[in-house]
Length: 559
Image (cartoon, rainbow, N blue to C red; front, side, top):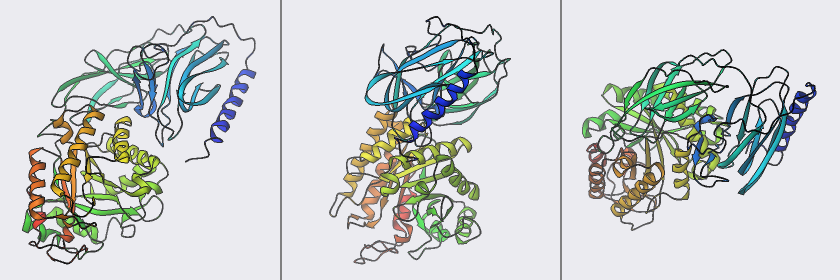
């Protein structure tokens, strides 16, 4: 937590109240407001956010729970973003206004920028908030807002009213946004960017249209439109809007076809067994490539070397050491790597980086060190996986690096039950959707269920459970859901003495190919050597097999 919840909201409210008093004290003889709501779409009954804009694209319109009518605002706050949703309106100078609204959730605020604010905590029912303020002697616009609080869960707001006279005689529209372009796409989303518009008073929002339908409203000059269909052509335009509600002409149109679902999926297929240079008698990566045909390795593990600083195993530098030498040799042989950031043990970056922005900076150092095409965050244990704050921090950090590195693929790897994601896995998937993290692949680790387990049956059942969860969360069809799935097994004997034989792994590989999933991996190439009766050790599988047999099988994964 950032600070004790019962202290920080009150302190913030006190500060805002002081600012409001100072503003009021500087104003003489305020005018009398006539009771009329000057907000547009105050109850979100249009079914869209516009003209409201929410930070982090974390706002959405929902049909339940509502206070009045059939729609309400939902703000999916995270550990680093309070989902501040605001609307700027024209007002009259030196005039008194009253802002009120109905809110529901933990620590929900209602207020006006530069003026007064109030808050409440009512997690199970709507309650009404109300504040009054007086505009300045030359003030012609006001921005009202509602927001939640860090890591306190989704809040809801409805029927927001700003009572007072409308103002402004501004009739000049902003210039049209220029150079609209697509910066990235998946099978279900398109990322857009454009050049800023100008206005005689100021641009307050940009409205994104798909054809004639407005699909998103943002305050900045970039956005990601999600929830799209695979293999479908969309045409987008953007219009700028000012405080008086004047809308610009449309930008240039840009047409984008989303990536294919099913066999095409996200366009990302990866057979990438783990290679660990920290122990387990690491083999020659290029010799294994030559023997098996494998092209990708998942390189483990990136940890914290202290604070928010990434290093191999938390101790070896990103560049200039043996790890970089091995990566260079893999690439010279026509292959590539994806780093695994995290894992079960060690000092992880997720808990040590205090904000999503800082964590994204740590990820960026790894990306920049190797010019990566993909990164994998192996989110495990109670310090990351079973920690809501750190989960959200990781998701928001991956969202940031995805936006800053067009074409980068992001992978999340986590544990599972025999029937699909656990509570924490379900939460991770739900938050990935709520935060628009745009994760490419959700990879489960279907092992350590217990000795004697049916490893083929349990792997298939766990993957089907993940597919069902992705379908219900993102609204995908089966083919699109499978195309966002990865499987990461454990060859030979697992930690709990489960047996995955070469025949079983071949069956899992064949099932993965027939269902066109995105990724197949196993732990680890170091263990891909025979030692029947050897138990669970770091440099062999504990069973009878040929050298690199699991790697050869994995190389046959094509998706």
